[in-house]
Length: 86
Ligand SMILES: [Zn+2]
Image (cartoon, rainbow, N blue to C red):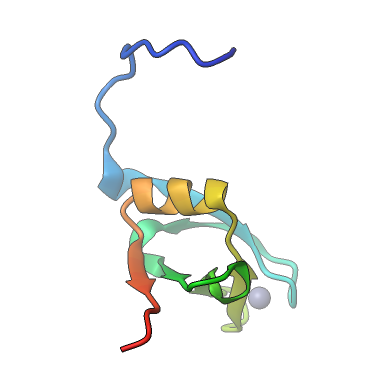
């Protein structure tokens, strides 16, 4: 399955996208809708992360976001904050 640029995909439904996530604290596994996730893009990888609140235990989870994850999240309609210096 390498990069043929065919456009045979059906139209995506961004509002219906669910992202699988897991909580490092209670080890719950769940699916989150795009509006339950936040993505913060900083100037470096260390300040680029996504966050969500665990629906099981309420923990605020923050995880580093690589380029692949950023693409997935932004493509799925996750709210993105760009952390630029003013
Ligand atoms: Zn949890």
